[in-house]
Image 1: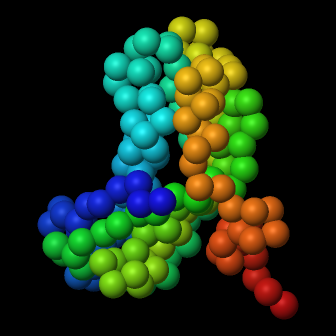
Image 2: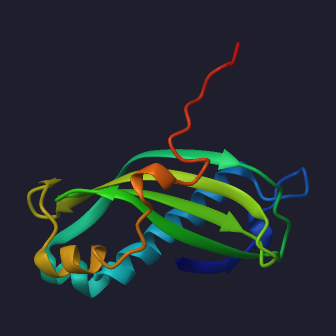
Length: 151
């Protein structure tokens, strides 16, 4: 599911002439915000429900360089979820479908007023159920990666 369209801003380009590694994280953060908007946790929804999402963990994989002005598209796959967490996988591609980076994230639903994890409000839970979900045996190849030296 396409969740975000953007482009490489001039201030995101580093001394190597391509998008700085931290800016990939920015794009994926913007994708989380787009996901929140999609499921009903936009600014008004956060106020109404007293609820938001926090990022607990993220794993970013860089695949290709992105250059100033280059159009970007981020797609979302829901890997798993429970009553208060979302395990999501984002793919950042150029307009030709070339994979630039991925980000696997664990997001936690939070009661804004209590500052504690909380169950998804019913309307949010209902919308989450409509997100494209990968079958457990057919996750994207770059999901569930670990960092380590292979010997």
